[in-house]
Image 1 (cartoon, rainbow, N blue to C red):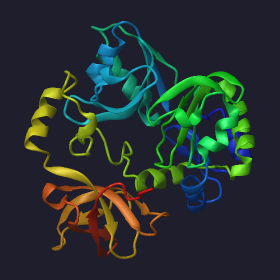
Image 2 (image 1 turned 90 degrees about the vertical axis):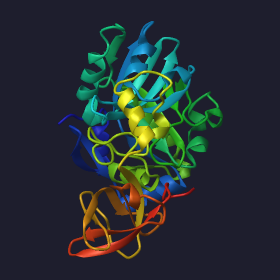
Image 3 (image 1 turned 180 degrees about the vertical axis):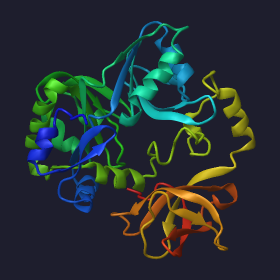
Image 4 (image 1 turned 135 degrees about the vertical axis):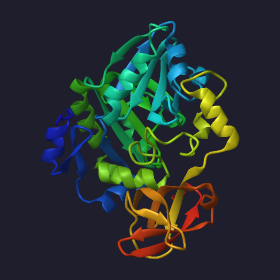
Length: 361
């Protein structure tokens, strides 16, 4: 089990630590609901240093990225980031990721921790004709997500960069918490605003300490992976391994908006056909009409008790006070307002398909 550079800091803070994607990670400090509320109303900090970072450079770097990702990275100017996915050869998804354009011929790809090796091998496999320089920086870099509506105000004293001027999915390489070259990215997985800070492992303790000093008057708190999951689920954001996998297509998962046919990419021809005739099933968001908590793996059934799908993510929403979830159902059950049932133990609990996100700020 690998540690992040901040593992001892989390343990000293009394975090409950769990194995996650090969890392020893803080799942909670004071409880999911309290931490969730901190991010929705104030400012909280996640250590997400388990994520992977690949640097891709050279004259053909963009061509390689265009080949392996579904979104159109040619639209990225320096200082912009883009959500995308890596389609596989059979129409599924190798991983979802964020692509950053750092310089003219330099890109940073941020991938999921559990997929670092798989993603590296997949991208490398397509690199032969492009010969782009690839570096895996995952073991050397840390990532802090400073999230919440008070993040800009709380962190402004730590940098000469005007944080309020960084638009969503834009970033700046600048000074932060006494470190000269840090990526300050207006991204995150919570839907409550804030930043993600990329720095070296050797720098992250200083950044962490100064972030908590600067945020003290704003009620800043550390937040674990459990609240990260409830926050992302309230936004309807997909989690790799649950809502998207090697077996789910971007169109089934509602990721048509990051699948651009203005270029040729892995399996693009077949995906274009799928787009034309439409997928047979879709990922939907649902709310329970009665009390209950839907969980990953629970059956979705119709009114006759026939299994029509499976819950891919589910929880009791701290913000809404009701059971919410995501799951794949046949297209005829995918319209907003459709009635489905979630099999919770021996009871089929009625639920309604709703428009995402569940949480509207």
